[in-house]
Length: 413
Ligand code: GFB
View (tube, rainbow, N blue to C red):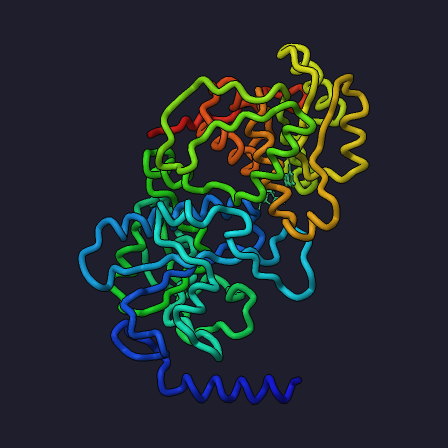
């Protein structure tokens, strides 16, 4: 095996040594004649699922705006979706899996907003059998002096790397680059178009993409992009079956195509309270904000009485013992989505998280966890579904604290 890998490596190196850099007009591989260019991005490894969804939006909006402003042939980017591999909070096998976006999201919907492709489509398009050498890699980093000098002006500059960055190339053994630079950066992701259109490289990877910010958080384009992030239909079906079977809830509020959605504020939701309770690393990292189990039990019970509801759906990353502690003193019907092992193997931790989010987003009333991006995404989903904001922007209070409530980022059409 080792010998075989060694021969492949030598062969790969030999194939590439005369062609270290592909210009869009050069012929570096069978399909390199096409004028398409490919923008890849990756995120700081410890970041979780729902922050990654937000980083996607920043880059999908960049790809969308590039497409809209198309002026020359250099402006011909496809955004390559980074597969879901080895997320910090997810269980995974020793061998990295590369879960495509289509397993969690509806790809057709995404594509109606921006020119995005799956990683496997990228591999097919460039057709490099023995591996991919990315033409230009930029590791984004904050300007060293930004916080000391208070200079928050938009700017970018190639600089020395502030630390030794480990680029993992999406955990593919045969993806690499010999052209890596650090780019100190402050500004929205759309400003990166200046860098992209100055270069004529065919493939560009931006690592630590979370450093680039939103163009305009909460504007119409933001919400169009967000609305295009419809979930995978199989996951939607599992969530609907669960709601019908256990929560007496079956309403579907959205048209088939997100582009046909209309503003509304009259959605009622199923007859249950939706709860998102973030525990695990929040208990350590945010101990001063996380309420005790007794307090959570009390807050849920009070809400159910106040809302005249008799059942609660709890989405949580708590383990089974902690979950039992939470529900044992709630004098109402409690539900949690727990897939059988075959379904879990198929839909993975990401699928379970999405089903939890869908069920919470269809509840009559939702209460989430302070500053959890998991809860933020549920709030956005409810804005899209058309719930009155009072039923959405709520979070649990830590006992004896002021208890700030979430900012109301309302949908814009
Ligand atoms: O989505 P997430 O990044 O939001 O949460 P936060 C991390 C992971 O926890 C998710 C699991 O990908 C899920 O796998 N998880 C959390 C849940 N809540 C639930 C739930 O109700 N149901 C299910 N099924 N899974 C931040 C991270 O998490 O927390 C940061 O993004 C950092 O990277 C910080 O770790 C401490 O914003 O809550």
